[in-house]
Image (cartoon, rainbow, N blue to C red; front, side, top):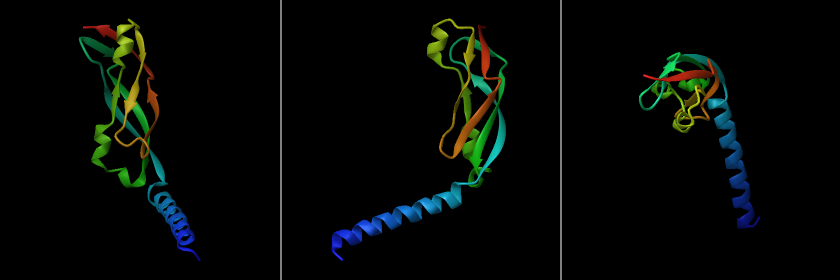
Length: 113
């Protein structure tokens, strides 16, 4: 075989092996529910202040300190439009391994303090 063909087959076998390894190590996901405060910038207050976030977490990250960095927030641009009920958004440090599935309640009311 030519050298170019050998390199092509080595690259394909590397990608297949890597995808199999990722599937075995990070493929299994478990549901986890966390409770977080809703972050609102400025002189505003959210009602209710706490939301329940359901996450699908990889098995290896169930006891990881990365779960402490999951936050719930409200977009600042939507506050400028003077909306009263805003959608809660979730930030996760590794969105492909810690995936937010649901937020309860999905909307919060925002008031001036």
